Image (cartoon, rainbow, N blue to C red; front, side, top):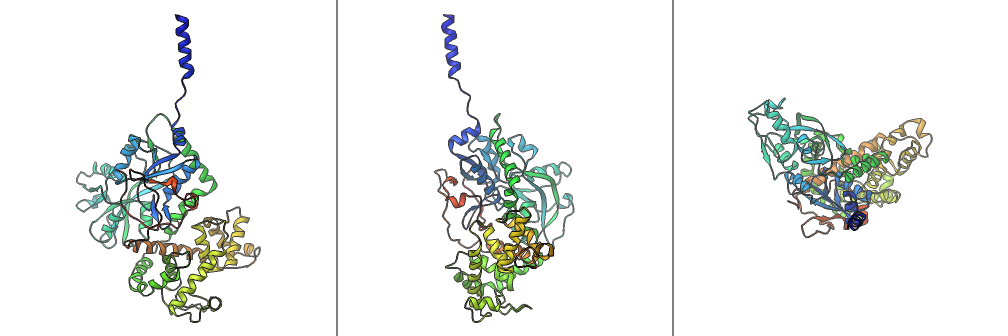
Length: 490
């Protein structure tokens, strides 16, 4: 009897197997289930499909572990943590900062982006210097955010401090309320402010509410850390190969040169000047792979949409074409708005066609813009110098600093086209990126052309695993093509 029992126990032990790790479960499922939120700092549907800095990171992570991406958007910020805790998703990539309260509810992966919380006010309304100056005013923040935790902490010293927690609004709505005098203050992260200050030039930072925060991905609390460890390996990998910096530059690089006066003037010119030429910009790109708003941004950078503009070097018109360029394009009258716009569209398309096929979007567009400004030969020289300095000539973030070296004899003497004012294309591209994104913001209320959308699952989530390969590759389309609020998951 004892022998039989022992044999039975041996048999049972022999048939037991170690349960799969969370990472193995994800890989067996074939999809990484992620909850995010609709925001320019996380994820949104652009002109060419899904975009956003955290979208690119989570797409890359899914590819890194060999699965597709099943993406869900939260209906409100306050619903993100409950969904993670429920186990309905594997992780959250939603601009979440690591806080003491949140670490009691979920597990965080490695921090990857530092942020500072800013109190925001409108220029000209009187700048508050400390939290005590906010008392008695309308302070509105998004419910469920780390801003609420910061305010609760401040309230311990200032019992009279009160605020409104809005469960339905997003950053854009609350910042717009400030700009339109519908509210006095709000709190946003530095990443959010960096983007929206270009669209709402009246908003200003009053003071920092909290410093030293960091954004990270969140996971359900469990004894198994296999997915978190793999995420850490992925982030280390893309930091080492430069992809992380390229993603951050793609979405935040152009925001560093904010010009309050210039932005206000641009918005005025959008209302006053652009309506005369808008149809021309649209018609000029009908047979060309360009967004009309990008072409309009080039026109503004060149001439501020002035058909009679002329530079000291003799370039003229809205698109500032040289005499030789105009001649090669068949343009007879450079100051004729329609001829200039159509000529500029064709010339930019030519530059884009000359860019090597190995350069993917959006870098391909930035290279084409730089070539439009400085000439294709000088751009190629900068790429050569980039290669000489150990950089990657396929990426704008690497080539950009090497354009500046075209002013130094040590470097321009080693390349074909020689000296060039290399700082000009750097500023040129940054300005156009800013103008382009502001145009996308200003035209955002118009019904957009519907891009091909990811297939929706029965619960309303977007199955990114079925997105075409060109949207699943490491290269992303142009940033900030549209911003909308809302979501698909409770």
